[in-house]
Image (cartoon, rainbow, N blue to C red; front, side, top):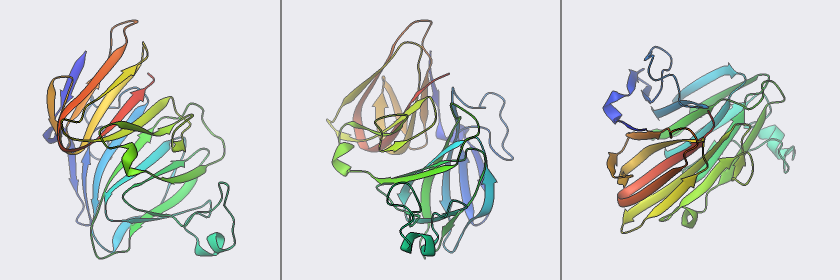
Amino acid sequence: MQTVFRSEQRGAANHGWLQAKHSFSFADWYEPSRMGFGVLRVINEDRVAPHSGFGTHGHRDMEIVTYILEGELSHRDSMGNGDPAAVRGGVGEAGGAHAGVIRPGEIQRMSAGSGVLHSEMNHSAAPVHLLQIWLLPRSRGGAPGYEQASIEPASLRGRLGLLAAPEGGLVAINSDARLFAGRFDGAEQAELALAPGRLAYVHVARGSLVVNGERLAAGDALQLEPGAGAALRLQFEQGEQAEVLVFDLGR
């Protein structure tokens, strides 16, 4: 079954400093038919005003991925990431503390595990436009973790690049999911085949393109759930400055 979910069907929240669009039920927006899709629980499109942001708060048992479209966001957490003293002290060449500023062309993954405190702030004079994604973990508890990686632009041009996965992605996630991104314009095309029993979710971050015969614009989504034992195939074409995120999901 293939279902289109248009941008205007999303939940919306205006907090002054934060303009948010929710693809799935979140905070004060509750829609029983939009409680997640497979292990995908949240896609929030956030615009954060200058000199503001998300103060320190906690999470547990969730894989949280941040994808910046415009601007930059400063991250700090209880693991020492974003702490200048920890970074200067060389805590983390191999998975320790990181500088914690996330920019376009980068991806960040935070595993909440048994519990983590963090903040995300826009210290600049320009707004930040981002997507925040929550995925249910394969296993609960465990130590929190953090990873940040640069995305090679050529890996997304007219193709789908693997950003996050249990294995083989730019960042590793503790979830039965793979996250791809791609950029398409003009005659550029790509195809993605998923194994039988998987779910697929496509979110257009900007621009527009045709996916499996459906024209999707920024904020639109396409979700696919096959019949028993059936495989999925996604076709991407006719892009108009399109940037798209694609999820291969367990149930």
